[in-house]
Length: 141
View 1 (cartoon, rainbow, N blue to C red):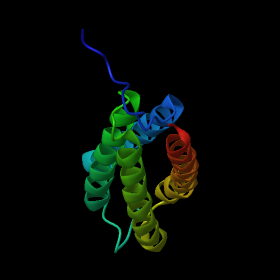
View 2: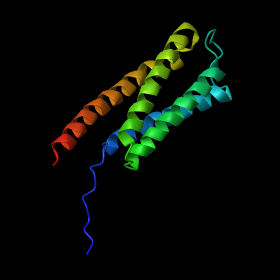
View 3: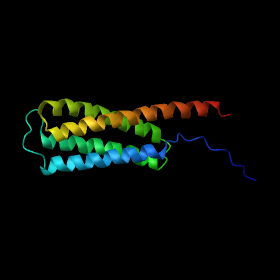
């Protein structure tokens, strides 16, 4: 007779965080499209360049999408992927905000000022969730 051993507890992340990250990825995809397609107003000045912003937003969007997919699929590495992707996005947005503040248009600046706190909130929620899950795992026999 075969006995089944209990599985190790997964480091589950609330699916709502995955949905929030998916939303963030979609907004980045739209922003990248707008910048790369040339739909931005002509009022920008150096160091801001719409094509560079579009590429950066696309890269950050892919990272956030990867984290969102890991969370929504309940991957064993979901928490780590979500934290890494969100941290990368925060860093990218901070750099983008400094460049946009010096030469970007008002819509670009508003996007950065709006989404940066959303990303920071996501990371705070992930950090709190991670500590809770780790402490629960340590208490399990």
